[in-house]
Image (cartoon, rainbow, N blue to C red):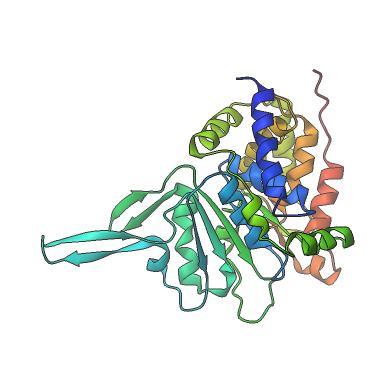
Length: 316
């Protein structure tokens, strides 16, 4: 199978999701690329802009088993991971799977639950497994978490710890639709549920095949150096007190391969890196007090770094 075949598959998935999510093409592309690069997605935005619809559209187009949990203060870690229950008939403890056992787990309003419950996601996001009572249970493949959170500072929210933020490959914000987009949304929902129009165009095997192909896309040594240079620049920037971890560097490398395939190439170029860099980096860095006093955002810093780091010249 050549690159054209895989690019066609990616485009067919995007076309189906666009039936339910109107006017957010770039968001759709980035979420799909994260899934195909074995990553997780964090979407921070106000309620009502289509975050849940986006996740449900992907689960339908990809024919993936999905579960959804509304994270409220009373949700327990065992609700997510599962628990052991005693069976008196055979005198043994039996494991009961939690809601996280699926292919696509939608964690709604993740920052409304307690830190203890949030931490239940750490192992499953990194290791794709869950350990309960000393026994490790593997999660199904493929596996992706799409989490939504309300803007920091909203009533009843709890900041996600840095260790958990670092496990999300990308962080996105959908934002309000434009004028024409919102008109189209009204028309599409006047007589029907847009999700009903989304048809399955892929399945587990399709996703696993795409993931395997993308993981082997060629990266030139100068691209590796470019990625590391971007990460290193965050660690030495005067406006940041926390830079990019090696996990973040790996995330940028992995998703750049997916971008290359989506663009019809079997090799990565610098434009792939700069296109997605902010989405990979912004939630991983921490501003210092000087930046906050100057009203400089993490996005401003990342944009400056992208412009300042020398771009390698790659000849075909």
